Image 1 (tube, rainbow, N blue to C red):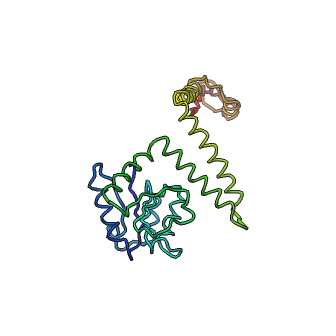
Image 2: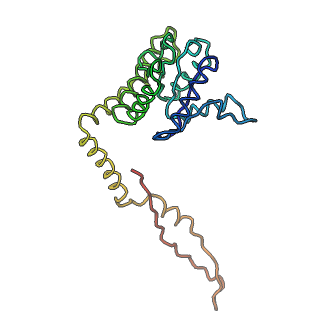
Length: 250
């Protein structure tokens, strides 16, 4: 994983599970960095800010679902909602069989830890690897699209223009990702063509910028120098040529 995993859990009924999960993921193989609040607290720093930054910098949020963590007033809800805001994958983990998946996460599949923990841990590791694949990235875009469409249906939503813009952008990204999956060679060729086009722009001759020489000539000053036998010795100074170079980034 490119960064750490943030574990969201309730201290009321899933602290033991969260610490067990963190130990297992860190021990590997492969070793995965995990952020758990009880082990990452830094005295003297604002605790809320530490959590926000940990979510902002995580690769994904693991949400341990228990009877307490799925409550509407649970701190866990604040954490996974913040993860959605930062466009982070949220992976629900069913720890207690009676815990219901929150409505906003209803489109996501969960990893079932109510049976064998070791078997579920193996499935979680496979899921984390899958997230890095083109198919996994496409699915995350679809999750985000479903989230935006669900948010748009809320009554009196003042964020409708922004959400509509997000939906249009997500639909475009999904179409691009599906095209890559259908024809990866063509997608790679398009990337190469864009790179080559950028290089051609950099190699193109740079046209002189109008007005530079004129401004230089107009700023030329007449200077006085004494010559033998001359009272004023007025002489015009010659202007040096100006060379300009424009760097075009493709």
